[in-house]
Amino acid sequence: MKYTIQRSVKKITQTGKPFIKATLKDEIGQEMDNVSIWSDFPNFESLQPGVETTGVIETSSQGFRNLKPATMQRMVQAEQQPLRNPGYDHRMEMIRRSQEKKYEAIAFFNATNSAISLVSNMKAKLMNGTVNRSTMKQEITFWRDWFIDEWKRNQGSGGKAQH
Image (cartoon, rainbow, N blue to C red; front, side, top):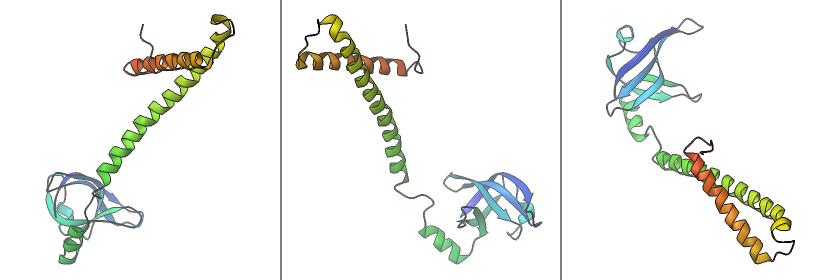
């Protein structure tokens, strides 16, 4: 696959082996950060930002990405292994939705607890201590919904109350 070097920094390992830490852009425009290009790579000395080169990015068992010279075997393996799992985008979307629902669930739980506490404390003052179950449920639901509406209204203000 052809890559264009976007950014690069020449480095030397502790054992004295030179390499380049680069950001590469492939033919479809996807950028790969932290790709190592070792000194045994063809035309190593001329590699710099803007230069186009051909190779295959391989990821080591430790998670390091290395640009290797293109050989027929590496090119065939690279085409068989997509860089990104096809379900990745779907999983990321599901995680994002779960996070949103998590915050809503926490707000609902807190609003319900606050409503129960408020109605329980108001019971003696407002209703002379005689309250039936249906009235309590209506009051709790009313105040729970009020707390949730307030939470939603304040979401746009970064959580600060709007007056």
